[in-house]
Image 1 (cartoon, rainbow, N blue to C red):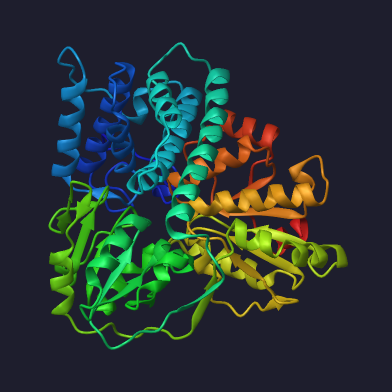
Image 2: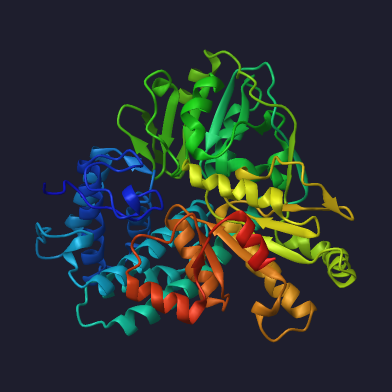
Length: 509
Protein backbone atom coordinates (compact mmCIF):
# COMPACT_ATOMS: atom_id res chain seq x y z
CA UNK A 1 0.00 0.00 0.00
CA UNK A 2 1.36 3.43 -0.93
CA UNK A 3 2.16 5.67 2.04
CA UNK A 4 -0.12 8.64 2.57
CA UNK A 5 2.64 10.58 4.33
CA UNK A 6 6.08 10.13 5.80
CA UNK A 7 7.35 11.70 9.00
CA UNK A 8 9.96 10.53 11.48
CA UNK A 9 10.96 13.78 13.15
CA UNK A 10 9.90 12.82 16.69
CA UNK A 11 10.82 10.01 19.08
CA UNK A 12 7.32 8.55 19.08
CA UNK A 13 7.25 7.93 15.33
CA UNK A 14 5.53 4.64 14.47
CA UNK A 15 7.72 1.60 15.11
CA UNK A 16 10.71 3.94 15.43
CA UNK A 17 10.71 3.97 11.62
CA UNK A 18 8.20 6.56 10.42
CA UNK A 19 4.52 7.50 10.38
CA UNK A 20 3.01 6.68 6.99
CA UNK A 21 -0.77 6.82 7.49
CA UNK A 22 -1.33 9.22 10.38
CA UNK A 23 1.06 10.82 12.81
CA UNK A 24 1.32 9.33 16.29
CA UNK A 25 1.12 12.99 17.36
CA UNK A 26 -2.37 13.14 15.86
CA UNK A 27 -1.68 15.02 12.64
CA UNK A 28 -3.39 13.73 9.52
CA UNK A 29 -1.68 12.91 6.26
CA UNK A 30 -3.07 16.16 4.86
CA UNK A 31 -1.42 18.20 7.61
CA UNK A 32 1.86 16.29 7.29
CA UNK A 33 2.00 16.90 3.56
CA UNK A 34 1.17 20.59 3.98
CA UNK A 35 4.01 20.88 6.46
CA UNK A 36 6.36 19.23 3.95
CA UNK A 37 5.21 21.72 1.32
CA UNK A 38 5.76 24.66 3.66
CA UNK A 39 9.28 23.52 4.55
CA UNK A 40 10.19 23.05 0.88
CA UNK A 41 8.77 26.46 -0.05
CA UNK A 42 10.71 28.03 2.82
CA UNK A 43 13.96 26.48 1.58
CA UNK A 44 13.25 27.86 -1.90
CA UNK A 45 12.50 31.28 -0.42
CA UNK A 46 15.88 31.23 1.29
CA UNK A 47 17.64 30.03 -1.87
CA UNK A 48 16.12 33.00 -3.73
CA UNK A 49 17.81 35.31 -1.19
CA UNK A 50 14.69 37.38 -0.65
CA UNK A 51 15.52 40.11 1.91
CA UNK A 52 13.75 40.82 5.21
CA UNK A 53 12.08 37.42 5.60
CA UNK A 54 13.59 36.42 8.95
CA UNK A 55 10.38 36.34 10.95
CA UNK A 56 8.52 34.57 8.13
CA UNK A 57 11.16 31.84 7.98
CA UNK A 58 11.18 31.52 11.78
CA UNK A 59 7.41 31.02 12.06
CA UNK A 60 7.32 28.68 9.04
CA UNK A 61 9.83 26.39 10.72
CA UNK A 62 8.28 26.67 14.17
CA UNK A 63 4.74 25.78 13.12
CA UNK A 64 5.92 22.44 11.68
CA UNK A 65 7.40 21.23 14.98
CA UNK A 66 5.77 18.15 16.52
CA UNK A 67 2.44 18.88 18.27
CA UNK A 68 2.29 22.51 17.15
CA UNK A 69 -0.08 23.03 14.26
CA UNK A 70 -2.95 20.87 13.06
CA UNK A 71 -4.81 23.54 11.06
CA UNK A 72 -4.88 23.22 7.26
CA UNK A 73 -5.97 26.82 6.69
CA UNK A 74 -3.13 28.17 8.82
CA UNK A 75 -0.58 26.10 6.92
CA UNK A 76 -2.04 26.93 3.50
CA UNK A 77 -1.93 30.62 4.37
CA UNK A 78 1.75 30.29 5.30
CA UNK A 79 2.49 28.39 2.07
CA UNK A 80 0.77 31.03 -0.08
CA UNK A 81 2.51 33.88 1.75
CA UNK A 82 5.87 32.19 1.19
CA UNK A 83 5.30 31.31 -2.46
CA UNK A 84 4.17 34.84 -3.26
CA UNK A 85 7.52 36.16 -2.06
CA UNK A 86 9.55 33.92 -4.36
CA UNK A 87 10.37 35.54 -7.72
CA UNK A 88 9.30 34.05 -11.09
CA UNK A 89 6.01 32.52 -9.93
CA UNK A 90 7.62 29.48 -8.37
CA UNK A 91 5.43 26.43 -7.74
CA UNK A 92 6.18 23.45 -5.51
CA UNK A 93 6.89 20.22 -7.45
CA UNK A 94 5.02 17.04 -6.58
CA UNK A 95 8.04 15.12 -5.30
CA UNK A 96 9.06 16.77 -2.05
CA UNK A 97 9.32 15.72 1.57
CA UNK A 98 11.83 13.57 3.42
CA UNK A 99 11.96 10.65 0.99
CA UNK A 100 12.65 12.84 -2.04
CA UNK A 101 16.32 12.62 -1.02
CA UNK A 102 17.20 9.12 -2.20
CA UNK A 103 20.63 8.69 -0.60
CA UNK A 104 19.93 7.45 2.94
CA UNK A 105 22.93 9.11 4.58
CA UNK A 106 22.46 12.47 2.84
CA UNK A 107 18.77 12.31 3.76
CA UNK A 108 19.66 11.55 7.38
CA UNK A 109 22.04 14.49 7.68
CA UNK A 110 19.69 16.87 5.89
CA UNK A 111 16.89 15.99 8.29
CA UNK A 112 19.18 16.24 11.33
CA UNK A 113 20.02 19.80 10.27
CA UNK A 114 16.43 20.67 9.32
CA UNK A 115 15.13 19.52 12.69
CA UNK A 116 17.89 21.43 14.45
CA UNK A 117 16.83 24.56 12.56
CA UNK A 118 13.22 23.97 13.60
CA UNK A 119 14.28 23.90 17.24
CA UNK A 120 16.43 26.99 16.74
CA UNK A 121 13.47 28.76 15.14
CA UNK A 122 11.30 28.01 18.17
CA UNK A 123 13.79 29.66 20.49
CA UNK A 124 14.35 32.59 18.14
CA UNK A 125 10.57 33.10 17.90
CA UNK A 126 10.32 33.48 21.69
CA UNK A 127 13.22 35.95 21.71
CA UNK A 128 11.58 37.91 18.88
CA UNK A 129 8.35 38.10 20.88
CA UNK A 130 10.28 39.97 23.58
CA UNK A 131 11.88 42.34 21.06
CA UNK A 132 15.23 40.56 20.70
CA UNK A 133 16.73 39.48 17.40
CA UNK A 134 20.10 38.72 15.79
CA UNK A 135 20.68 39.13 12.07
CA UNK A 136 23.61 36.69 12.14
CA UNK A 137 21.28 33.94 13.40
CA UNK A 138 18.67 34.80 10.77
CA UNK A 139 21.29 34.82 8.02
CA UNK A 140 22.67 31.45 9.12
CA UNK A 141 19.24 29.85 9.20
CA UNK A 142 18.39 31.11 5.72
CA UNK A 143 21.76 30.20 4.20
CA UNK A 144 21.58 26.72 5.74
CA UNK A 145 18.03 26.07 4.51
CA UNK A 146 19.20 26.97 1.00
CA UNK A 147 22.20 24.63 1.30
CA UNK A 148 19.86 21.73 2.11
CA UNK A 149 18.70 21.91 -1.52
CA UNK A 150 22.25 21.67 -2.86
CA UNK A 151 22.94 18.16 -4.16
CA UNK A 152 26.64 18.95 -4.44
CA UNK A 153 27.16 18.91 -0.68
CA UNK A 154 28.81 15.70 0.54
CA UNK A 155 28.21 13.83 3.76
CA UNK A 156 31.32 15.47 5.23
CA UNK A 157 29.99 18.90 4.24
CA UNK A 158 26.69 18.18 5.95
CA UNK A 159 28.34 16.88 9.13
CA UNK A 160 30.26 20.15 9.35
CA UNK A 161 27.03 22.05 8.72
CA UNK A 162 25.31 20.11 11.51
CA UNK A 163 28.01 21.18 13.99
CA UNK A 164 27.76 24.75 12.72
CA UNK A 165 24.02 24.50 13.38
CA UNK A 166 24.89 23.52 16.95
CA UNK A 167 27.12 26.60 17.20
CA UNK A 168 24.27 28.88 16.19
CA UNK A 169 21.97 26.91 18.47
CA UNK A 170 24.17 28.05 21.38
CA UNK A 171 23.93 31.64 20.12
CA UNK A 172 20.15 31.40 19.85
CA UNK A 173 19.68 29.94 23.32
CA UNK A 174 21.99 32.67 24.67
CA UNK A 175 19.83 35.28 22.94
CA UNK A 176 16.64 33.86 24.44
CA UNK A 177 18.28 33.64 27.86
CA UNK A 178 19.21 37.30 27.57
CA UNK A 179 15.69 38.21 26.44
CA UNK A 180 14.09 36.35 29.35
CA UNK A 181 16.44 37.53 32.08
CA UNK A 182 16.63 41.17 30.97
CA UNK A 183 12.84 41.30 30.68
CA UNK A 184 11.76 39.26 33.71
CA UNK A 185 14.85 39.08 35.94
CA UNK A 186 17.11 36.13 36.73
CA UNK A 187 15.29 33.01 37.95
CA UNK A 188 15.49 32.46 41.70
CA UNK A 189 14.79 29.48 43.95
CA UNK A 190 11.00 29.27 44.18
CA UNK A 191 8.38 27.01 45.69
CA UNK A 192 5.47 26.60 43.26
CA UNK A 193 2.03 25.59 44.53
CA UNK A 194 0.47 22.59 42.72
CA UNK A 195 -2.91 22.78 44.47
CA UNK A 196 -5.87 24.95 43.43
CA UNK A 197 -7.98 27.85 44.67
CA UNK A 198 -11.73 28.39 44.35
CA UNK A 199 -11.75 31.00 41.60
CA UNK A 200 -12.48 30.54 37.88
CA UNK A 201 -9.20 30.12 36.06
CA UNK A 202 -7.13 30.00 32.90
CA UNK A 203 -4.49 27.35 32.27
CA UNK A 204 -1.62 28.55 30.08
CA UNK A 205 0.58 25.95 28.42
CA UNK A 206 3.52 26.04 26.02
CA UNK A 207 6.64 28.18 26.36
CA UNK A 208 5.92 31.80 25.43
CA UNK A 209 6.55 34.22 28.31
CA UNK A 210 5.49 37.24 26.24
CA UNK A 211 2.00 35.73 25.92
CA UNK A 212 1.93 35.00 29.65
CA UNK A 213 2.83 38.57 30.55
CA UNK A 214 0.06 39.98 28.35
CA UNK A 215 -2.43 37.53 29.83
CA UNK A 216 -1.46 38.40 33.40
CA UNK A 217 -1.85 42.11 32.71
CA UNK A 218 -5.27 41.58 31.13
CA UNK A 219 -6.57 39.39 33.97
CA UNK A 220 -5.51 41.61 36.89
CA UNK A 221 -8.48 42.37 39.15
CA UNK A 222 -10.87 40.23 37.08
CA UNK A 223 -11.27 37.46 39.64
CA UNK A 224 -9.66 34.97 37.22
CA UNK A 225 -6.64 32.96 38.42
CA UNK A 226 -3.79 31.94 36.12
CA UNK A 227 -2.13 28.52 36.38
CA UNK A 228 0.79 27.23 34.33
CA UNK A 229 0.96 23.83 32.68
CA UNK A 230 3.82 21.75 31.30
CA UNK A 231 6.77 23.80 30.06
CA UNK A 232 5.25 27.06 31.34
CA UNK A 233 6.01 26.02 34.95
CA UNK A 234 9.41 27.83 35.08
CA UNK A 235 7.68 31.20 34.62
CA UNK A 236 7.12 31.09 38.39
CA UNK A 237 10.89 31.31 38.91
CA UNK A 238 11.16 34.80 37.34
CA UNK A 239 10.87 37.78 39.73
CA UNK A 240 8.73 39.96 37.47
CA UNK A 241 5.89 37.44 37.29
CA UNK A 242 5.67 37.19 41.07
CA UNK A 243 4.01 40.58 41.40
CA UNK A 244 0.77 39.26 39.90
CA UNK A 245 -1.56 38.20 42.73
CA UNK A 246 -3.63 35.97 40.42
CA UNK A 247 -0.59 33.97 39.23
CA UNK A 248 -1.24 31.15 41.64
CA UNK A 249 0.47 27.89 40.70
CA UNK A 250 1.08 25.01 38.33
CA UNK A 251 -1.61 22.52 37.35
CA UNK A 252 -0.85 19.03 36.13
CA UNK A 253 2.18 17.55 34.47
CA UNK A 254 3.77 17.17 31.05
CA UNK A 255 2.02 17.71 27.71
CA UNK A 256 0.97 14.09 27.04
CA UNK A 257 -1.41 14.01 30.02
CA UNK A 258 -3.36 17.05 28.90
CA UNK A 259 -6.47 15.27 27.63
CA UNK A 260 -7.10 14.01 31.16
CA UNK A 261 -5.87 17.11 32.97
CA UNK A 262 -7.46 19.73 30.70
CA UNK A 263 -10.84 18.09 31.24
CA UNK A 264 -10.45 18.29 35.03
CA UNK A 265 -9.16 21.84 34.95
CA UNK A 266 -12.68 23.01 34.00
CA UNK A 267 -11.57 26.49 32.94
CA UNK A 268 -10.27 28.11 29.77
CA UNK A 269 -6.97 26.88 28.29
CA UNK A 270 -4.41 28.78 26.22
CA UNK A 271 -1.82 26.98 24.09
CA UNK A 272 1.03 29.36 23.26
CA UNK A 273 3.37 26.99 21.44
CA UNK A 274 3.81 23.35 20.53
CA UNK A 275 2.86 20.51 22.90
CA UNK A 276 -0.81 20.43 21.86
CA UNK A 277 -2.52 17.06 21.85
CA UNK A 278 -5.66 17.07 19.64
CA UNK A 279 -8.34 18.14 22.14
CA UNK A 280 -11.34 16.04 23.09
CA UNK A 281 -14.77 17.36 22.13
CA UNK A 282 -15.69 17.56 25.82
CA UNK A 283 -13.36 20.54 26.36
CA UNK A 284 -12.44 21.69 22.84
CA UNK A 285 -14.64 24.79 23.14
CA UNK A 286 -12.48 25.91 26.09
CA UNK A 287 -9.19 25.65 24.15
CA UNK A 288 -7.66 28.78 22.61
CA UNK A 289 -4.47 28.90 20.56
CA UNK A 290 -2.03 31.59 19.47
CA UNK A 291 1.33 32.09 17.78
CA UNK A 292 2.61 29.01 15.93
CA UNK A 293 -0.02 26.66 17.35
CA UNK A 294 -3.47 26.09 15.88
CA UNK A 295 -6.14 23.40 15.74
CA UNK A 296 -9.19 23.42 13.53
CA UNK A 297 -12.27 24.33 15.58
CA UNK A 298 -10.36 26.07 18.39
CA UNK A 299 -10.42 29.87 18.69
CA UNK A 300 -7.16 31.39 17.43
CA UNK A 301 -6.00 34.67 18.97
CA UNK A 302 -3.87 36.62 16.54
CA UNK A 303 -1.44 39.42 17.20
CA UNK A 304 -2.45 42.91 16.08
CA UNK A 305 0.21 45.62 16.12
CA UNK A 306 2.31 43.72 18.62
CA UNK A 307 -0.51 42.97 21.05
CA UNK A 308 -2.99 40.15 21.66
CA UNK A 309 -6.50 40.64 22.95
CA UNK A 310 -7.32 37.76 25.28
CA UNK A 311 -10.84 38.98 26.04
CA UNK A 312 -12.57 35.90 24.51
CA UNK A 313 -10.36 33.64 26.63
CA UNK A 314 -11.04 35.63 29.81
CA UNK A 315 -14.80 35.78 29.22
CA UNK A 316 -14.84 32.01 28.67
CA UNK A 317 -12.99 31.47 31.95
CA UNK A 318 -15.45 33.60 33.91
CA UNK A 319 -18.28 31.25 32.91
CA UNK A 320 -16.43 28.12 34.03
CA UNK A 321 -16.28 26.42 37.46
CA UNK A 322 -12.99 26.42 39.40
CA UNK A 323 -10.40 23.72 38.69
CA UNK A 324 -10.80 20.26 40.18
CA UNK A 325 -7.88 19.62 42.52
CA UNK A 326 -5.73 16.71 41.33
CA UNK A 327 -2.82 17.04 43.76
CA UNK A 328 -1.39 19.14 46.59
CA UNK A 329 2.06 20.29 47.52
CA UNK A 330 4.90 22.26 45.98
CA UNK A 331 7.56 22.02 43.29
CA UNK A 332 10.93 23.66 43.95
CA UNK A 333 12.84 25.11 41.01
CA UNK A 334 14.70 28.15 39.74
CA UNK A 335 18.23 26.75 39.47
CA UNK A 336 19.28 28.57 36.31
CA UNK A 337 22.90 29.59 35.81
CA UNK A 338 22.99 32.75 37.96
CA UNK A 339 21.28 31.04 40.89
CA UNK A 340 23.65 28.07 40.73
CA UNK A 341 26.65 30.40 40.38
CA UNK A 342 25.49 32.03 43.62
CA UNK A 343 25.66 28.59 45.23
CA UNK A 344 28.97 27.73 43.55
CA UNK A 345 31.10 27.68 46.72
CA UNK A 346 28.62 25.38 48.44
CA UNK A 347 28.46 23.08 45.41
CA UNK A 348 32.25 22.99 45.00
CA UNK A 349 32.76 22.21 48.68
CA UNK A 350 30.23 19.36 48.43
CA UNK A 351 32.11 17.92 45.44
CA UNK A 352 35.53 18.28 47.08
CA UNK A 353 34.31 16.66 50.31
CA UNK A 354 32.77 13.77 48.41
CA UNK A 355 29.22 14.63 49.52
CA UNK A 356 28.35 15.01 45.82
CA UNK A 357 29.98 12.32 43.68
CA UNK A 358 28.27 12.99 40.37
CA UNK A 359 25.82 15.24 38.56
CA UNK A 360 23.32 13.59 36.24
CA UNK A 361 21.87 15.73 33.46
CA UNK A 362 18.35 14.41 32.89
CA UNK A 363 16.99 17.11 30.60
CA UNK A 364 14.80 17.03 27.51
CA UNK A 365 11.27 15.88 26.88
CA UNK A 366 8.66 13.72 28.52
CA UNK A 367 6.33 11.48 26.52
CA UNK A 368 3.55 8.96 26.74
CA UNK A 369 5.42 5.75 25.94
CA UNK A 370 5.62 3.24 28.78
CA UNK A 371 9.36 2.91 28.17
CA UNK A 372 9.76 6.42 29.59
CA UNK A 373 9.00 5.09 33.06
CA UNK A 374 12.71 4.22 32.91
CA UNK A 375 13.54 7.83 33.82
CA UNK A 376 11.45 7.74 36.99
CA UNK A 377 13.00 4.45 38.06
CA UNK A 378 16.50 5.71 37.16
CA UNK A 379 16.03 8.80 39.36
CA UNK A 380 14.80 6.64 42.25
CA UNK A 381 17.74 4.25 41.91
CA UNK A 382 20.49 6.90 41.83
CA UNK A 383 22.84 6.87 44.81
CA UNK A 384 22.07 9.54 47.38
CA UNK A 385 25.37 11.29 46.68
CA UNK A 386 24.23 12.31 43.17
CA UNK A 387 22.43 15.46 42.01
CA UNK A 388 20.09 15.65 39.00
CA UNK A 389 20.35 18.70 36.73
CA UNK A 390 17.20 19.09 34.64
CA UNK A 391 15.44 21.35 32.15
CA UNK A 392 12.45 20.81 29.92
CA UNK A 393 9.37 18.72 30.60
CA UNK A 394 11.54 15.63 31.26
CA UNK A 395 11.49 16.89 34.87
CA UNK A 396 7.93 15.67 35.35
CA UNK A 397 9.17 12.09 35.49
CA UNK A 398 10.93 12.74 38.82
CA UNK A 399 10.62 16.30 40.16
CA UNK A 400 7.78 15.36 42.53
CA UNK A 401 9.71 12.44 44.04
CA UNK A 402 10.97 12.86 47.64
CA UNK A 403 14.66 12.62 46.69
CA UNK A 404 15.86 14.91 49.50
CA UNK A 405 18.96 17.11 49.51
CA UNK A 406 22.70 17.05 50.10
CA UNK A 407 23.74 19.56 52.73
CA UNK A 408 20.84 21.82 51.78
CA UNK A 409 21.38 21.40 48.03
CA UNK A 410 18.26 19.76 46.53
CA UNK A 411 19.00 16.55 44.65
CA UNK A 412 16.90 17.82 41.71
CA UNK A 413 17.96 21.21 40.36
CA UNK A 414 15.46 22.47 37.77
CA UNK A 415 16.96 25.12 35.48
CA UNK A 416 13.68 25.72 33.64
CA UNK A 417 12.36 25.17 30.13
CA UNK A 418 14.03 23.07 27.43
CA UNK A 419 15.86 26.17 26.15
CA UNK A 420 17.35 26.49 29.64
CA UNK A 421 19.57 23.55 28.78
CA UNK A 422 21.77 26.54 27.95
CA UNK A 423 21.96 27.15 31.70
CA UNK A 424 23.07 23.57 32.23
CA UNK A 425 25.83 24.05 29.67
CA UNK A 426 26.98 27.25 31.40
CA UNK A 427 26.97 25.48 34.76
CA UNK A 428 29.14 22.70 33.30
CA UNK A 429 31.55 25.24 31.80
CA UNK A 430 31.71 27.08 35.14
CA UNK A 431 32.54 23.84 36.98
CA UNK A 432 35.23 23.11 34.41
CA UNK A 433 36.74 26.53 35.16
CA UNK A 434 36.48 26.16 38.94
CA UNK A 435 38.12 22.74 38.92
CA UNK A 436 40.74 23.94 36.41
CA UNK A 437 40.07 21.16 33.93
CA UNK A 438 41.19 21.24 30.30
CA UNK A 439 38.25 19.16 29.04
CA UNK A 440 34.57 19.48 29.87
CA UNK A 441 34.29 15.69 29.65
CA UNK A 442 36.51 15.30 32.73
CA UNK A 443 33.76 16.69 34.94
CA UNK A 444 31.80 14.26 37.14
CA UNK A 445 28.74 14.67 34.91
CA UNK A 446 26.66 11.99 33.18
CA UNK A 447 24.26 12.96 30.38
CA UNK A 448 21.11 10.83 30.32
CA UNK A 449 18.81 12.77 27.97
CA UNK A 450 15.25 11.92 27.01
CA UNK A 451 14.15 13.44 23.73
CA UNK A 452 10.93 13.82 21.81
CA UNK A 453 10.92 16.65 19.34
CA UNK A 454 12.97 19.17 17.42
CA UNK A 455 13.97 21.53 20.21
CA UNK A 456 15.81 18.58 21.73
CA UNK A 457 17.66 18.23 18.42
CA UNK A 458 19.12 21.73 18.58
CA UNK A 459 20.09 21.18 22.22
CA UNK A 460 21.92 17.99 21.19
CA UNK A 461 23.74 19.73 18.34
CA UNK A 462 24.64 22.58 20.71
CA UNK A 463 26.14 20.15 23.22
CA UNK A 464 28.14 18.44 20.48
CA UNK A 465 29.44 21.83 19.31
CA UNK A 466 30.52 22.59 22.91
CA UNK A 467 32.53 19.38 22.91
CA UNK A 468 30.35 17.29 25.20
CA UNK A 469 30.75 13.57 24.56
CA UNK A 470 29.16 10.31 25.73
CA UNK A 471 25.59 11.62 25.72
CA UNK A 472 23.00 8.90 26.22
CA UNK A 473 19.73 9.42 24.33
CA UNK A 474 16.48 7.60 25.01
CA UNK A 475 14.17 5.87 25.04
CA UNK A 476 15.47 5.23 21.47
CA UNK A 477 17.94 6.79 19.10
CA UNK A 478 16.31 9.00 16.43
CA UNK A 479 14.75 7.07 13.56
CA UNK A 480 16.15 9.61 11.09
CA UNK A 481 19.73 8.62 11.87
CA UNK A 482 20.94 6.19 9.23
CA UNK A 483 23.32 3.38 10.29
CA UNK A 484 26.30 5.23 8.81
CA UNK A 485 25.42 8.55 10.44
CA UNK A 486 24.84 6.77 13.75
CA UNK A 487 28.28 5.18 13.41
CA UNK A 488 29.88 8.61 12.95
CA UNK A 489 28.09 9.97 16.04
CA UNK A 490 29.10 6.95 18.10
CA UNK A 491 32.74 6.95 16.99
CA UNK A 492 33.32 10.72 17.12
CA UNK A 493 31.05 11.79 19.97
CA UNK A 494 30.26 8.66 21.97
CA UNK A 495 26.51 8.99 21.41
CA UNK A 496 24.68 6.03 22.92
CA UNK A 497 21.29 4.94 24.14
CA UNK A 498 19.87 3.58 27.37
CA UNK A 499 19.52 -0.05 28.48
CA UNK A 500 18.16 -1.07 31.89
CA UNK A 501 18.19 1.06 35.02
CA UNK A 502 20.39 -1.46 36.82
CA UNK A 503 22.97 -1.72 34.03
CA UNK A 504 23.07 2.01 33.39
CA UNK A 505 23.56 2.85 37.06
CA UNK A 506 26.34 0.25 37.23
CA UNK A 507 28.10 1.47 34.06
CA UNK A 508 27.74 5.26 34.41
CA UNK A 509 27.68 6.17 38.08
